[in-house]
Image (cartoon, rainbow, N blue to C red; front, side, top):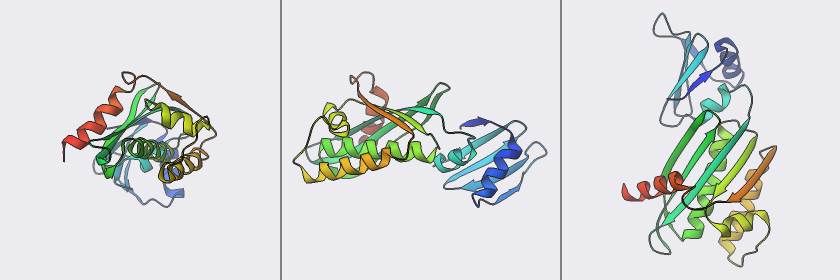
Length: 197
């Protein structure tokens, strides 16, 4: 459960300005409660605790400023194409902000890598970050997004366009190729999603 250290009154104002209904707390210690986008926020003095299955949108509204996030992504495919999944991790100086893995149907490994990149961009944007440092273990994806390599594959070309558009949501961004062991958590989440099927 993410805990956001903040002024709970200003956090409430940000939620209300975004059209989120804020209700009274359930106990004497709770300042207020609000549900939005699959998550629930419970405010206490000086902090807001966020819980639920999908808290990204709610967390994005609660944070006062974007800040920088390190985003790790990985795609996995069993067969090429075959059953595929993505994994991603968002990390700040405070530790892991969010992570996840999910099946995406049938895809090649490169398609899965791009889908993982697109997913982590979406989650980082929903969290309200304005600077993103992307890290993935697919040299192909990294170099294509940077514009160093081209592709003849129409689907990968489309994914690259989508990724470049997604990056425009951030004031600053970079994408870097890292060894698989540096990207181990994202890889693990993608494979766990495949194993859970």
